[in-house]
Length: 297
Image (cartoon, rainbow, N blue to C red):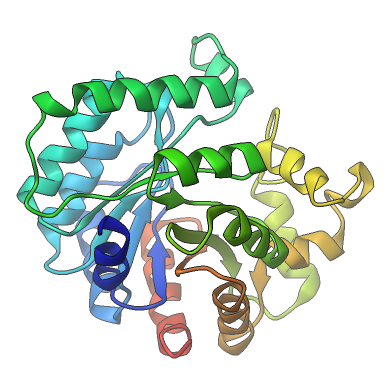
């Protein structure tokens, strides 16, 4: 029931990501209103420990908008107690029925240790965390519309956990072939919401330069690299032009919309486009420009 209700409330095949550095709340309100007015069905934010706190941030965005679904991609399990994750999501879902999607994930070992925390085996960490979320649910509000729980999942074992213990998965920055495999693992009864990074740039060298300059290819202990190896790519492929082109959608509006369509055809329920931009205003500008083509997918 949660899965079908969420599919309906997402309002179409395409959402938007606003995943940029810290900015004043007034700028966030303006940007999310522009995304909502452009017609996107959802908007998603990310989280780093010590940066924008997911639930406070989602509260700002929900209060500033009227219909759009607001999701975390992802709320970091290392940033809060499992009961706080469950309770925070329940409070927002109670205040804004049908408009919250909780995506949660284990982050990366290097980033966790940089925050002064001790890294643990990610699959067991997530399994134990979900247990404790479930145990605390009776203490939290019961929203009139239950919120979906989604896992940031790339590898097959985490995708299986998303199938068995959540309402679906939120893979990011992967080729279309990963979407196809994720759907096979999840089956038809779970949500598959794909995060697609995009660069509205038609020059190949310039577009690939944006990717290389973003740091996405140089993440410590990268789960993306492990997942790509699982798809058959070797170490020599990971920073190649060919794999950049498969992982990141670049080009004009038609080209980027075509990549969204490929993910949908491969089994995604909803594709969230996240433009690699330096600030919120530029992100909103680019998302508005892309909207007519993307919303026609």
